[in-house]
Image (cartoon, rainbow, N blue to C red; front, side, top):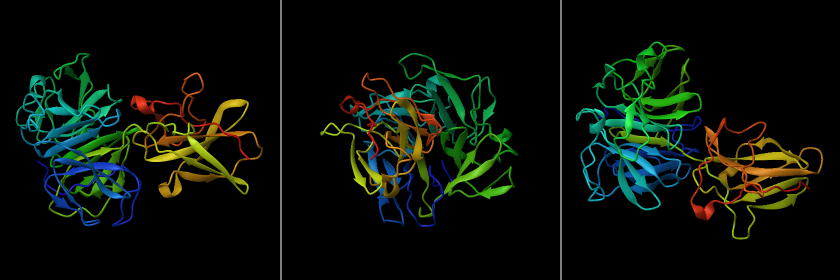
Amino acid sequence: MRRLLLLLTCLGAAGSMTRAATPVYVTPDVPTTENLGGTTLLPWKVYRYDAIGYVPVLTVPGSPTIDAIHKMDSPGDWLLSVEATSNFSGSLTADAEPRDVIRYHGATGIYSTFFCGGALGIPAWSNVDGLYLEGGDAGNLIVSFDVPTDLPPFSTFEPSDFVRFLPAGGPLCSDWALAAANPAFDASAAGAGVSLSTNAIGADDGTGMIIFSVDVPTDLAPPGPVTYLPASLVSWNGATFSIFETLSGWPGGSLVNGISCASNPGRLPIRPSSAQMVVSKSGGSIVLDWSASCSDAEDYGIYEGTIGSWYGHTRVDCSDDGSDLVERVTPTTGRNHYYLVVPHSFKEEGSYGANSAGVERPAGAAVCAPAQNLTRCPPDVQTPSGRMIHSP
């Protein structure tokens, strides 16, 4: 059980009492009225938090208190754990225990057991307190526990550790194996170490770093030591700790029971007019107007290349100013340019679109995010994206 206020975000620094520009998904431990927009958040719902405010994106039947969440790359799919045993009002054929992980399939609305904690030796008194997938939807499962937990051959995993399970190749919720390379985050060995009195929860990962929060004020070093508060999201890059984000506005007395950063950025769908972008000229600039990504883009990058020197494109703008899917670009010298619009999150880009043969275009020479995720969207939007156009 989490003990103090936690509020986690997956974005760059935001000012006090301002809403996030980059989306993060959260769920509270009790009905909670946030003091930015006055929305009452319920503990059996998942909310997307961004510049608009809090918008519910998933309601779990049976009204269980959600403990941990993870937004999968497959659009509409989620992983979650609960604080108390529940069958989700009959949506599950067997009860989900707090040591289990449940999957929600967005395309069908079906809930199924993804990870059976009891079958894997997790004691009944240990709750899955935070979770994420390492390496995509078919990757390793990383979890934290709310109490010290023994899993042989390892001794005790502390609540500030993250534990890695490997998929064993089968379809059953028991088809997982405790990894030899554990823990995924060893709190005692990170820098000067994390205090045993601290719970590191609400985990996610980024390129080259792990992101987590603390449930009590915690001194971490290097550098410092610096005191990190429960409202801060902390990053560890293997050498130093830093504040990834601090967000105000969540009321005291409520806890953030789950957090997930944005997932697969997706690709631009083809519009009914068969054009991914509308292009117009404005003085010596061009104006690009495009459709939103089919998945979970936080922002969009614009790439410029030279016609005839195909796939030499490079970034010219990494932010959709105003978040209106419209951007003005001044071409570099010359007229024979093409442009691509590519969705991205803070840690990865989506598709650059496919060529006429259906082959994915390569990433840019200089990019807006360090990794790429090419998880497909549903069939109705699995279309080539990123139109090549001439500059004026």
